[in-house]
Length: 268
Image (cartoon, rainbow, N blue to C red; front, side, top):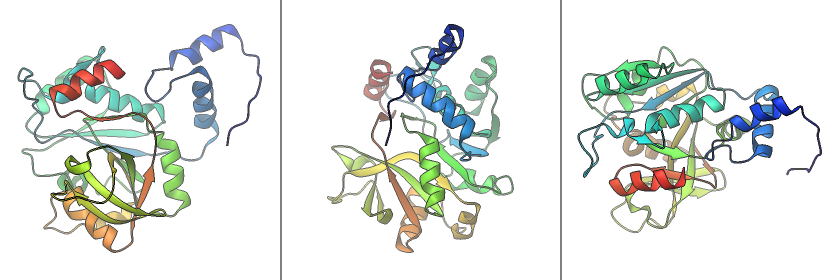
């Protein structure tokens, strides 16, 4: 619940407030002020986040260039994901890469974007990068897909996660055609079933929005034979009643096709 307030602010301060309005996560002056106050007063902070930027990253119809460094209105796709994490005061951000690592490292270094790099030799799924960070992630951490654009308020998701004492929380959104995504069956706050790209009617329009929050105890549930968060880990957690869902409304776009790329340039 929000209340209307009237305040007086110096003109130069207001100009600085207006600079953080990006049209994506912060879309108005009032939202910018609320964000800055929350950033100062809230105890909900992520110390670590891992961005997944590996695997198949070429888009049909676009020259041979990793989708993570395609420019969308002056910023790389992955740069927008990094900015989103930075806006919510995330501590250390690590980008995991494999076959495309040289391209991504070069472009981010050229822009002097401050992140750590996790360099893998080859694509082997979404579990391996998380396992590689096991010794670094001793507190609550986030995992984010590097090809996902979202207006998700990460601090609000973190507050939801921690207030419910969750082991794992997935950001959820709705789409008209869920068959190309990870589909969640939600009862209250719990995801009772998670199906990655269902072949048949899934019975739900709620899908994974590519943002996950985990407690470090999550590593106890990752076995050696697991390769995919979505196909192997989430179904297991859902079965055990250990997977929470955080539905949100707002911008969500997974950039996998040329059509997605063109749409991103229009809406951002």
